Length: 108
Image 1 (cartoon, rainbow, N blue to C red):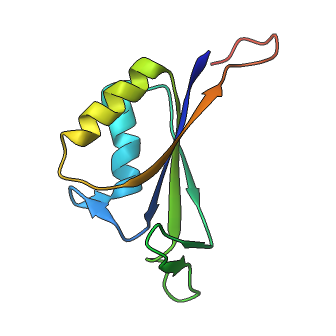
Image 2: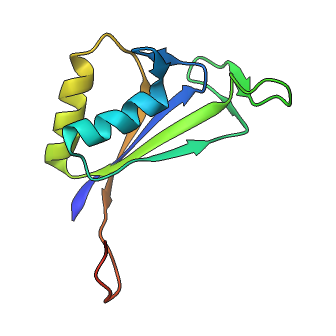
């Protein structure tokens, strides 16, 4: 299947609707009926403005977080239309890709 790998970049301390943005996006995945999402926590990163973000031993609020979706074109449009209707701003990368499942065992 052809589609897109959508990766959002944020920090652990960024919130929307009284919850961390990454949790809000996970819940949005369920709400919109999208096929899935993966949340990755990084140890360090530099954002699109050049600011360093890192996880510190005593405080993890500035920890970089990536939220990834593997979506077909219709799902991508659905997600972006919804996000564009919200009062939110999240940096993203949208990469064309091919995805699917390999092997002969039925997935659950």
